[in-house]
Length: 580
Image 1 (spheres, rainbow, N blue to C red):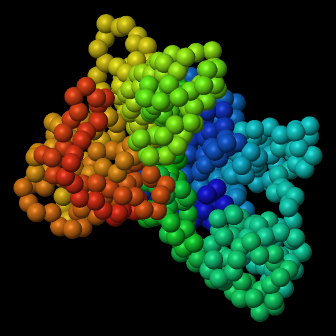
Image 2: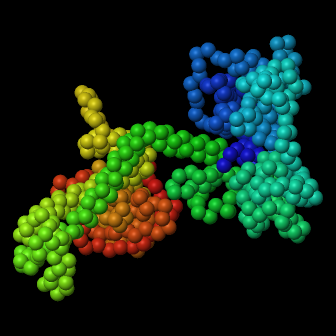
Image 3: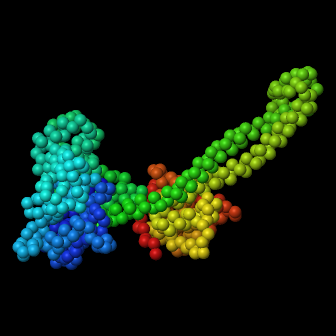
């Protein structure tokens, strides 16, 4: 979810409670489009981080510091000159705009009391941080916007600051029912889109939630709503925004497939497929959400080369498998050639000279069959030719039967590597996968005196009943978990017939409750290639019945006596224990 007007309202509420009356002790500009203010308040020192990045504009309170350039940029120097040691006397949000205005009182060079405004605009690629005097005259900005870049508004020293109204949106906090209905019905688009394109500060996710609360199809055109339905929608819209008016915020992150999916300052009841985690402040939400998102993005970028290697090898082996399967199908004729050869030895004397076929009784099926003949050869020579074809196809069949199994095993192995890359959370996880690919010959080893060590550990969960459950993130970890870490009476879980993690439940010599089996099954289903399926079949067995196949790749096991269960991939009820 983008930082819409509702989230900004939550941020403003938090900033007011934390920063009002505080004095600006330090001003830093770590990056060209970032500002970090250190503010001394009665409650202690606070840091306000603001970014006008086109790709990720943000504003929140943080406990972390960032290194600054040796020479401060001009914008930073100007702020230090004017508002260093200034007191924050007001923090406002105009209407429900994605704008925060910090009014700062300070003493000028003559000792007179003055006021300045630091305006944080969180507007996607148009985001900016603008410094104005009390009369809204722009003194400077972190990004200069000349007329060549924008025909709507120049953001340059000396210009008057104003909020552009290019979309002609209404203020959702004050809009009347008649104006609300008129604005929506004139939009020839889906109801949810009409909402967020007509009202300031309403994001697509918030618009979806309003439609959901009203029990209306978000794809329905507004023009099709009756007057009563429009009144009902307006009431739900008003009730939804009452949370903002009353500052009744509930910051939370919504997770899907164990990854952050959305964040919000108000409950999002329409996200039924997500679990959510509540936070004390919206700053904690933004800090956590983007830290995890950035980590996931960084790991995926770093794993791109390994993914390419695995995907290329997979495509090559899949093509090889298809070719081998077709060739194996062709060898099914070998038994027919054997019968032809035998029948020609028995009935060949009946064939006419230079005949192109012989009709004979197949004593295996007691049916008449036609045997094609080479008219330039005798029946015995034709018989010998068929036996040669039979023997050649038989040898081909035996070789292909072995090769197709090897190719299939290689495909399964590469899919397990692909699954390990999907699960990888840290650079150590990727290093371990790379080492496995190196040992398998897919990556050339770089000769170095320094021996590589890995700090990657299996995932550790705790069941609802307090039992420890461990999940391997790659084949090395799977093998270590199953054959070194697990005891004989521990329980082993794995998604049936698909690549996935080995899951070990430490039984502590006790009989496990049924719920532990269900939760371990969910983990095995979630950390498998069938993660996207609503239901996944999972095999489970005591670890002592799991055997390693000699000569097979790491992580490959066999078991002959097992139980099975059907599990979904919802693991929200499980507590993950941090790696240590």
